[in-house]
Image (cartoon, rainbow, N blue to C red; front, side):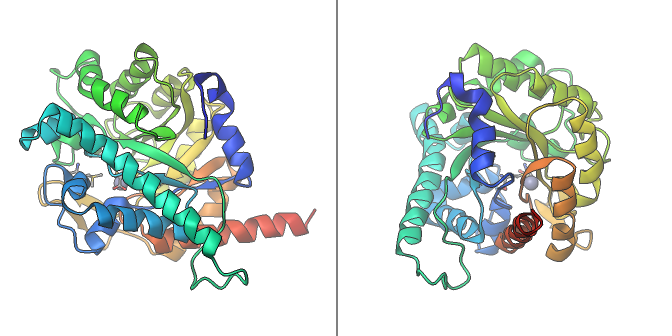
Length: 344
Ligand SMILES: C[S+](C)CC[C@H](N)C(=O)O
Ligand SMILES: N[C@@H](CCS)C(=O)O
Ligand SMILES: [Zn+2]
């Protein structure tokens, strides 16, 4: 896709129109990597697979495309130049690893489009969605708290030493590299506080970043973002950012999403994105999810139509959701468009 800065205002609305009104995001990337045997108990978390198992990252992207995702999110959530350098990589190699996360996702998209061309004309594709369509690659940028690798993205409390300027400097080079990597947009995800959203917005402007971005916050009370900062203020920062093409919530329990969409709607005209986790909670010391607090795919998906009715325009899943979740969202939204067509 071509997307000079001048087109930013219509970038997402055009894409959503092509997708039939609602676009489907992928589900948990790290979750799937672990399910396939990857050990993510590492400061780089899922980005460790860029070093050890890029083929697995590509396979998981493909699984999500075949489940019906229109947008795939790269394995760069916890890929930072600082994190790679701490492992002994040079600056150049660290930057190359960031680019590699995007290359892997673009390869998966190419392979997928090849499979669509070869797909069976009778539509019998072993349960895979092989439908030629525009697919976006979103370059993930996890927060400073994610880099800390202790689950700090669920507290957002960075201490007084971390300022707007510190955060801009922390993210600057990474954002520049990802913006020039061939990705279609940047996904600022699991943003835990207002100052980090402000840092991203200012960086996009200062560095004259040429691709659009989405901003996605997380909440643990259904009212504010996890740090306790006002969601309305956070979403207003995004509303004022001209490169921002969507604003929303990820990695947050599904039961909170309805109220959060209603809040965001009060302060934005931008498309709203929603990709909740399963409702389980993360133990950052053990790098494990605490079970028994989550919900089933059926329960998750039972919320989807309602979220779209009240304004969600991009819907997927975050941690502990899988290609099954995305496939179920795909089915639900297909039934929804069929029903609205037959009632016209
Ligand atoms: C979104 S959380 C589950 C990511 C992993 C966390 N930053 C850690 O390193 O433990
Ligand atoms: N894109 C990341 C988000 C973590 S909150 C992942 O799915 O692993
Ligand atoms: Zn998540």
